[in-house]
Length: 160
Image (cartoon, rainbow, N blue to C red; front, top):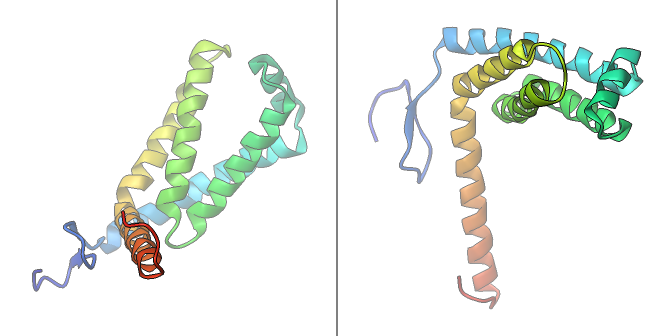
């Protein structure tokens, strides 16, 4: 452990990363806001059944249920981008969605995959800018898992 006030050290974690600078936080919020607006609009269009979206999902060939699920995924990811502490997860969630959108554009749909690729890159940027959130979430999950194992063992459960 160092005495550097700008260094974030997660308890019981071998990982130490620098606390995000003010510029990094402001930049992340700007990108998150733009992405949230984009995905709220796109997800909303899918959910209300804008004719162009219905046509696109007809071309994909998986049925309109897939349009609804995709819309829900996009709206949930957009909300997560705006909730403190969940931006990195929301961006990863939407980034995975955009990866599949790029593949769909390359192999199924006519037209350019460039818009989906740009959205994928911007989500990857948010994940990188908010990497401290991922470290905290993973550490919390690890501690919770260890605590659950210890509680189970104390109650006479099987040893792991």
